[in-house]
Length: 148
Figure (cartoon, rainbow, N blue to C red):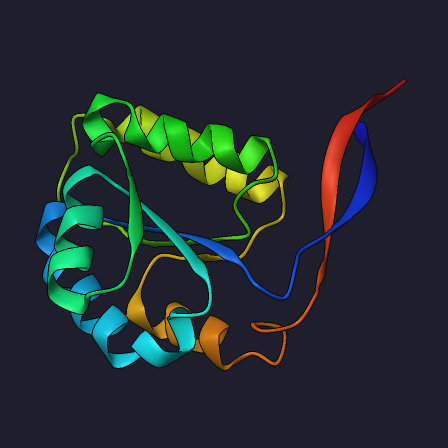
C-alpha cells in the first residue's frame, strides 16, 4: 500500500508527554531532575500518577491527564493525533505485562504515524535532548491517507 504524506513543523518550544510505568517512575523522575533546566522552557504533560510525581519531585509544572490504564494513554494519543504533542518520553517496562498493553501499543502506533520522537528509555531520551533540533523548529512527515 502507498500512503500520502504532508509536512508539519514543530515550534521551538515543544509540548512533551512524559509517561512511565510503575517500575520506571523513579528512573523518569531522576532523568527529569537531571535535565530540569533543558525541560523547563517546554510545556510538559503526563499521565496520572507520573505527572503528579514529577511535579512533586521536580517542581516543574506538568499538566496531568488520566492514569494510563484509565484512558490517559489514549488521551496522549489523541493529543498526538491533534498535533498538540511534539515528543513522547515513555519509560515503559518491557518485562512486566500491563493491563493496558493494547492502549500502549496504540499510543506508540500513533506516535509513529505522526512522526514524533519517542524515547522508551533513558539512553534514547538523552540522545533526543542532546539533538540540535530539541530547541529548534523541525519538520515531521505525517501520514495523511491511503493513495489508490
